[in-house]
Image 1 (cartoon, one colour):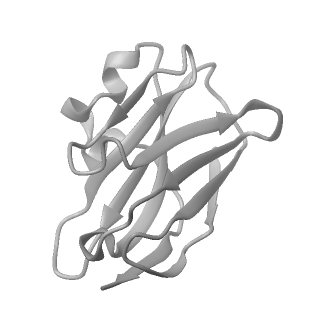
Image 2 (spheres, one colour; image 1 turned 180 degrees about the vertical axis):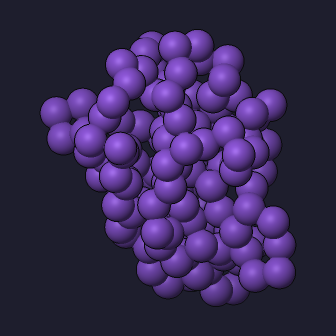
Length: 130
């Protein structure tokens, strides 16, 4: 069983930055996709960025490319989402999720469906004001 705990959410003005953290524990697979997803009120949950632990491949939604960066702190088993140049439309609950896989292509946007990820955190709220 994998446990995921998010932190780092909060309120910020447009143009500001936040860094979300996802502390992962209880690995049972050798390689994983770790992903950040978000859900705004009244909308479906969408993929934001994913990280493949096998070769550190990263994938981003078009709406966040150049602004968000997903990374891993190997020593601490923590995954980060650095969010810069935040916009009001980035306001959402942000979730960390994980799926076991040996192939990085399964971390790509083609597989950003809730059903593809076995493990989910509780979420952390991000609010961006204009």
